[in-house]
Amino acid sequence: MKNWQIALTFVLTNFCTPFDTNLLTGHIYLFSRLSIVHCEPHSQNDYTMHDILIFTLLFGSGIMAGICNATAGGGTFFTFPVFIAAGLPPIVANASNAIAVWPGHALAVVAYRRELRTHPHGLRLSLLLGLLGGIIGAMLLVWIQNSVFLKLIPVLILFATLLFAFSDVIRGWLAKNPQDNQGLPRRGFAHVFELVIAIYGGFFIAGLGIMLMAGLQMLGVRDIQMNNALKNLLAAVISSVAALVFIFSGLVHWQYTLIAFIGAVIGGYWGGRIARWLPALWLRRIVIALGLGLSIFYALKYYG
Image 1 (cartoon, rainbow, N blue to C red):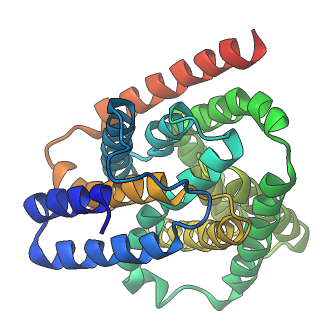
Image 2: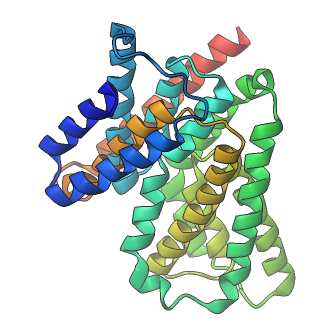
């Protein structure tokens, strides 16, 4: 094991249960085998204070992302800026971030497995569209130039922040205006909307959840628990296929991704317990303020 892997194992041993430690140490080994992709190796004595700071920030932001995604959402606002600050090209930072926050979607699917066993078979088309859109969105990220993506970062973050800020308003409006799921034209529009959402999710993951909830509501999924379950399933499908595209395209910096990934798993594991005493409203306000701040910062940086 390399020095950074040993250090992470030490952290996991002290902060996780034995089961969690064995599971996550397995992830360390797995990702270390994959770290030949976009990861420049260091010698054992080559780490600087800057490297240690970046590792710490990645691990801490991963924990915050896991907590946020398990409670209020918006975890990407914590991890993505750190990948950028680490000096990664914007596209590599976005691809690495998508994999780092992936555990939140996977764990959410497990949590809603009871509801998913009874989901309507007519929504299989939604899964297919999610699969297709996730691949298209990820391929767009692979093909786009870094200089173009740089200009999109402030817009994407601002868009995701506004979606997050007005998510309760959007949910309330959808609840008061239920869609007739028997109307063929309306369902056709809803499926087109789903495909667009999936493409967006494969390209940039932030804000995906509330958009998926809106699309499912348009399809007539009005039960909030079923809507959440299917939203998490679709988000997991979209993020999973996007992650595979990023991996096979060589866009992932595995060393940084692994550190944030483990932080996200730990944060997600403890997020449910923390949510019992941490007010979700205050966490939402922090995420919104962070998103707006990042939008302004990146706009001044890339447009100034």
